[in-house]
Image 1 (cartoon, rainbow, N blue to C red):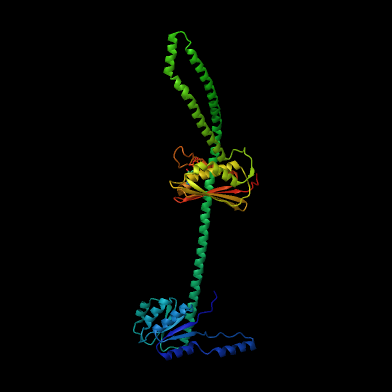
Image 2 (cartoon, helix red, strand yellow):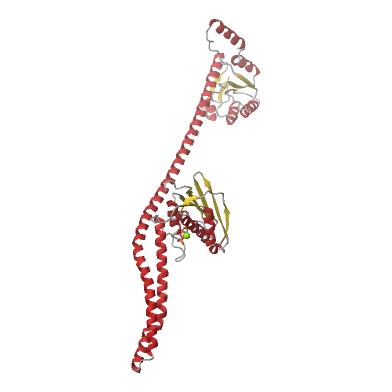
Amino acid sequence: MNKPPNRRVLLIDDTPSIHDDFRKILMPAVESNQALDAMESALFGETAKPQAQVFELHSAYGGEEGLGLLTTAMAEKRPYALAFVDMRMPQGWDGARTIEELWKVAPDLQVVVCTAYSDYSWEDLLFRLHAHERLLILKKPFDNIEVQQMANTLANKWDMARRASLQTEQLEQLVEQRTQALQLEIDERKHLESQLVQSEKLASLGQLAAGVAHEINNPVGFISSNLSTLDSYFNQLQQMLEAYQHSEAFIAAQDQRDQLQALRTSLELDFLQEDIPILIRESKDGIGRVVQIVKDLKNFSRVDNDQTWQFANLQHGIDSTLNIVASELKYKADVVKHYAPLPDIECLASQLNQVVMNLVINAAQAMGPERGTITISNGVEDENIWLEVADNGCGIAPETVQKIFDPFFTTKPVGEGTGLGLSLSYGIVKKHRGDISVSSEPGKGTTFRVVLPIRQTAA
Ligand SMILES: Nc1ncnc2c1ncn2[C@@H]1O[C@H](COP(=O)(O)OP(=O)(O)OP(=O)(O)O)[C@@H](O)[C@H]1O
Ligand SMILES: [Mg+2]
């Protein structure tokens, strides 16, 4: 930033002799003096005495020509520090107009108006140019030292102004950079906070789910075993009833036979015999579903520890899961696979398959009437492997995204989704000390990303 001081001066005056005067004042022949001074300091060890500043003076004989020189200088990035402008130039622009035009091109140009007499009053001129702080007035005939001092002072002023504006620019850049860094930090913090809230919420939901699952487990157990017992008891009763029915014909007394017949009709015994097994079967189905939900809840809350950890190939797992759900996908979507070579990972393989199954089925269910694409990709990243299931289905609304991992959150019609798929997948992934995340754009599609450590070092 340490540029040499700008000593370029523009003189605009229609009187040629003025140019000679200025040249003598501002560009004295100094080379010989410099040489002498250098010799003097070499001989006597003295520092050179301060010299009058040397200027680079450029001449124009009318306003338009002056503007031309200034424009070229600006384009070449060699601006003038100041201009001396004659006020009265009968041909072409006068001084006031010239100064206006110069300032349009170089607003920071310092200007000295040179005048013997003027067509304006000074008030009018200053008012017209409204730039008192960049304008000095030099009355002709002028003293050499006046010109020299004005040139010195104004050129320095130009330099200082330039330096100040550069510094301001740098400061503004610095402030801008700091602001950006701060904004990044704020965004990152917000993101972390929302992640924290989400994982705290899921952790407390997990405890709740574990509690509920535990409480339900016992009654569900005896209901389910009682139903089986009831089923077999009823079979036995059925046999007995049939035996009684066959013996009825051998009862001698007619009125007794009629009584039995009437009772059977009023109780609708035939219907009962048909319906009771159906009721038992439906109850067994129902209780089977409750058992499954309890199991899912336990998985979500990670309380079930009866599986064994093993090294398994995730891609085999994905493929066999895809086979199982093939019929669900057949009419909904094509599956595209982008597999990279993966090492075996230490995992609960059957549970990871369940995660894949949930993600793939959700993706298929997100498809509209048109056939979509489900893209399954995976790869290795440091100590982890990652798996992505992407679909071009309906996407998830931003206000919903926060809730999709909650147990029982579903947007699907009653009977179609329990809302446990993702919460259970979340639990399984966390049990593997991994991470599951989602990015989605409504109308475009959704991508779920699962990251799993290759080794469970703590296990
Ligand atoms: N790929 C996806 N595209 C769009 N929405 C999705 C996607 N995956 C999940 N969702 C949304 O997240 C909700 C919760 O999903 P989750 O798998 O937990 O439950 P579900 O699919 O509704 O029911 P379940 O899986 O228990 O049958 C879904 O109802 C759906 O609104
Ligand atoms: Mg689901």
